[in-house]
Amino acid sequence: MPAADARPLAPLGEDAALLAEAAVAAGQVALGYFRRDPKVWQKAGDSPVSEADIAADRLLHARLLNARPDFAWLSEETADTAARLDARRLFVVDPIDGTRAFIAGDPVWAVSVAIVEDGQPVAAALYQPATDDLLVAARGRGAWRGLERLVPSARTALGGARFAGPRKALERFAGAGHALDFLPFVPSLALRIAYVADGRVDVAMASARAHDWDLAAAHLIVHEAGGRLTTVDGLALRYNEPEPRHPSLIAAAPGLASEAMRLVAAPASAAAAPASAPRQSRGS
Image: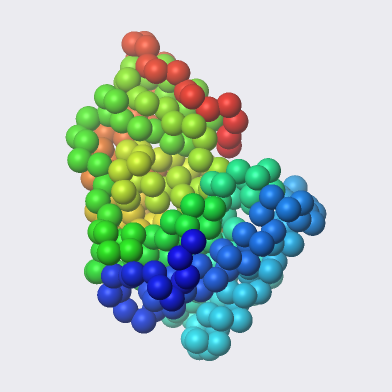
């Protein structure tokens, strides 16, 4: 695995570089616990957290706020406070997005970090440590993997489109009349959405109640690549609200966004032609 300081990055500015370095460092901390039976306990809402989540969160908190002490903070693994609501800029962090996958030894988890300014993400890094894959974006400067600019799919019709989402959604759409290619479940929501940015996924869906920390980094990466992430009604997302949760969402390549929203809005019985069966065995 290459050293973090040897990794080539596109010139995206100091904020994006800071996030990229911190995400890789936190990912290396988490990797030290991966597939090594970390301590695990349950949070409120029966959501698991591991000692790796806490260790990565502490590293991110120290490193990022030391570099930007005037920024506020919102993280899945840090107690939330109302102080962030008065801040123009804040870090939005998920130290391990996909904790259940991490605990199970599944490599599809990621460190997600973003800077939100006036309710919108302006810099982002998303790092998948198990594959050493780092995606970075900055507002107005594109989304990148190293020195490769990310480009979403050029598809303009749903037939054959690669669709990733919760199992219930895929079961519903399997009978919707489009020959969609239902992909195996992607347990990290941030990765599921970000895969739209480089064309691995054409359309991705998220169930209601996803949090800011699940979405902010992936949102900017998709947007800067040229894709879209909106509510299923086509409305824009806003971050750093008193309740940092969102309704059902859809991310799509630019030529599929409108058709994908129509598909989601259609009644389950709207079409009868068969579609390819989902290839996943679990998911939410």
